[in-house]
Image (cartoon, rainbow over all chains, first blue to last red; front, side):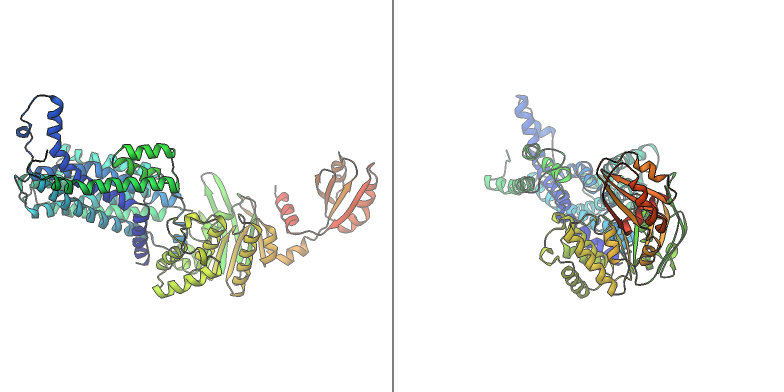
Amino acid sequence: MNSFKAYLLKEFKEGIRSYKFLIIGVAIIIFAILDPIMLKLLPRILASQSNIALPLDEFIKVSQGAALQNYLKDINQIINIVIIFSLMGILSDEAKEKMLVFPYSKGASKAGIVLGKFTNYAIAISVFLTFGFMINYYYAGVLFPDSFINFRVVLVVVGLSSIYFIFNISLIILLSSVFKKGIWAGMSSIGIIFLLPLLGKILPIKRYLPSYLIDQCNKILALNNITFDYNVLTTILGITIYVIILNVTSIWVMNGKEIA
Amino acid sequence: MFEGLTTLQIIKLLLPLLVLEFGLKILCITLILKNGVRNLSKIAWIIIVLMISTFGSIAFLLVGRRRY
Amino acid sequence: MIELKELYKKYGSHIVLNGISLDVKKGSVFGFLGHNGAGKSTTMNILTGLINYDSGIVRINGKDMKSNKNEIMKNVGYLPETPKFYPYMNAYEYLSFIGNLSGYSKKEIRNRSKELLKQVKLESAEKRRIGGYSRGMKQRLGLAVSIFNKPEILFLDEPSSALDPEGRREIIEIIQNLKKQDITVFLSTHILNDVERVCDEVVILNDGEIALQGKLNKIKEDYILPVYDIEFENSIENIKELLLKESWIYNIHEKNKLISVYVKDRDTAKKQLLKLVSRFDNPVTSYSMRKSNLEDIFLRVVNKNE
């Protein structure tokens, strides 16, 4: 418990001072603002370049829900990569730079270290996502006032996408404990996170995959109604189990790792 | 461009974006000049930060910042 | 206090430690000597639980390392050769972090940190980020970190090697202070001068094996075979070969016009060496007998094993 608290605090400090929070926060918030603005401007830019007066507004009929869907897509792609690159060295760098020698020599528990790091970023990213979606909701509402989306739908989207990212964080932590160099942890994280949804296309396991939550977020935004294909709790339960397995494996890897 | 919105409203909408973007650029340039850089030269990083919006600064903070 | 029996460790096919056994008594300052690469740091890392060992017994305070690692760690302090800190923290924050890890209360952390920063003379730099510290400052902060939890045993890996004479003297003074507090210090170093100043007992490690072990003053007595330094007027070609033919001379170091003759038998040397030297057609400009210091003992022990 002491190790957990010490590392939670340390990781929070590091998040601020090494600009990791800033990078992730700014990326999430800038896209929340930029996204609906671009969506608004794009038809006009296209029109001004084509020289033909196309009734583009009719072609691209954007609603607040569609703007939020677009933001969700960006979060799942660009922001996901930004988070992976920010966190890929979370354990590998510490081991490589021998930063763990003093904590280990004081009997720091590996479980405390792994869970402290995990908890810090799980909370931080959930908070950033909440802000991001709120800002995006506001901008999309102002710019596309024709149709409004139910705020409760947005809250569910925030919750589900946070759970999706919590899975990603524990995966990055595990890969960072396995690889000596952060970049390999990052590359393999990108590989797994973006290939995993394809598995759902081949095998009938779609609803046990974390990416199913993002699919469902898209769907409820499109329908403006909280209804799921399957009981989404099954997916959440599955992810909880995956996260536990991933974290336990990270702790196990760190226990066997020679850091001196 | 934004029909149904006054100029003031448009500025209000864009202001946070500009503040974030320029704040980030100023922070990065300060860090480059004060603490130094990794991987690329100072000039290269300054150009990247100034020319590429958001991602230039993010790339610098991730791989260009000197960690003492 | 510290007990090692037949300790083995290898990396791949390279044997780093080949059956090391030693025994360190409570309250002593134990000098651990050897070349770079002799296995000193590996032994230290095993004793502090940072790396695993292949076979053998490690007991600290009578407790076995493999089954009581965490309990042992609480009573042990370790200063690695190159201490690494989170560079974005300042000294006070890092000590607080260590205090949090060890489960101290806020008040205890504040008092202990202030006390230690004063002891290692970092009070004026406590608010500066560690990333900007000099090597010597990091070493002193490392020492503060290693003794934060008031350990009974302190492992110091080359604590003074990278420091200037002043920094070295400060570290040695701190070690002498620790000795008064009845802390057992396990000191690995290749600066023999430091060892002679603070250590009670020494072990010399060579190629993963113990080459010599004992009380420092006892070793000095045992190894008090004198060394003769002889300086000639002209260059000293083939004098070495001729002298080495004598059975009581076992080693010769030559440098320019100076040779150091290591003899096995003092009495014979007293009578014979001068006669022998005078036979060469090369005038002697100086002739003196040197007592063995630890450096000579070290060289003799290590070379014998080669």
